Image (tube, rainbow, N blue to C red; front, side):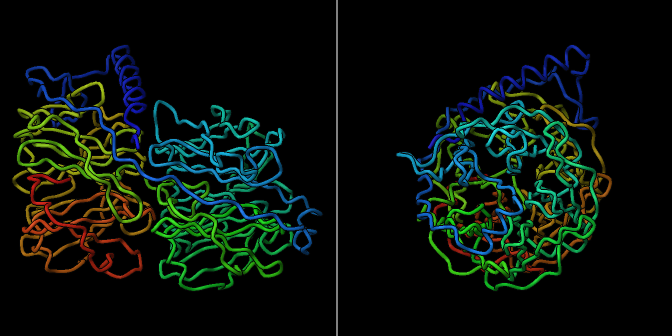
Length: 595
């Protein structure tokens, strides 16, 4: 499978050229140092002269399965749906039936069609701006009145956009409306009509658990009304899924799951001030699924189905009771390969972008990458450089510093920090030789842009706010001193479940601590929490991002003997956020660096 490299090279090169042109026109391309953290022209710093090969990761399977045969519409719920005109959200082809939109591991979007053509899933044209990888895709039904469902898309930097879709399910148009500031939420979802006006509404949850309702307007030029706070304490759920009238009253409903696997049903009320009725517990052990999702009636009974995907890649659907909304019997929808759908529209978990792979530099000086398969395993290695071409290099592999959602390759060479954009080594400034640790957990400042942490030999830790383009930093902030107490600082995404990037730190004695992120650049971390002891058994700790498909950042660790272990993040609320380790194989001591 080609992992976005060709398309990414083109889009990133275009973006870099456009950004450079803008900077030159504005007089903003300045020489800088690590102290000032401005974009640098690299004067006096020789370019490393290293090259990267065209990278094509090993092939992986595509999702498999088929939609169930339709039954006759005879339920009470159906009659009420038809009477109230409950809007459907997922008909992208205009045939009156729901379809399933997903993003594959190469970044391309596909539509799994309900009409079951010869090739059931077909490519769906959907692109972010300047090569950005969309953080989330939210179906909102047919707002334009052309007979096909439309979309809201969320950018990594918090721009929500409305997009009309093309009839026949070929793709989506460029945005016709945008709104900024949506990075204050860790989850945005459509819920159907919860206010009784036959328009699809939107819910948004903050990192701290406040829930807001945005009523739909039915106007593509301004699709949402001003927000209304409708709840708090919603941080207790790791998955939230809106469904289009599960209990047959014509109103949208919602399922919410705790990290421990308890499933709750919230029925719509029709009251905009309090759109959800009191929760009802409808199940346990739902943590067996790494993603929950929904789809609007694929069985013909007039009610939506609740979807659950296992870490192994099987996709199941549950019908819902016509009166209570309770999930009933489970049926197989997709037999295999759904782990390769890195995003289903919609998914219940917090969306995660920034890093989904690891990078190793072996003793010969050759770079290799391993990609997440979203099922807890890694692909076979992919050679990223000529044999020995990176011998002696000091490399780093932080979460994405631009909007493309993929980890960036950095090198400190002769004191200058370079970012290996597809057009070549781009200098980010001088003076970086003063730091003995560079790590990029993701967005630490709350603006959605990837940031960088740098530690001096004296133990001072600094935060460098990314400019969102991978070409420089907005400035640096002192995080504090005393960080020399740790011999490892790693992170790539959200460990605690609030959608903010977090950091792990290990002492030479083997005690591992978690620093939860705050989203505030002036104080980016909360007080540390002790995870456990005995971690000195590992020579390397590696932050791969999410490798299990649940949106949570996981952890890898290598022993001196070369055995790789996997620790999956659980979010169960205990001090130790990880499951018992799993052996991932041997031979990993071939790498002198692993990021």
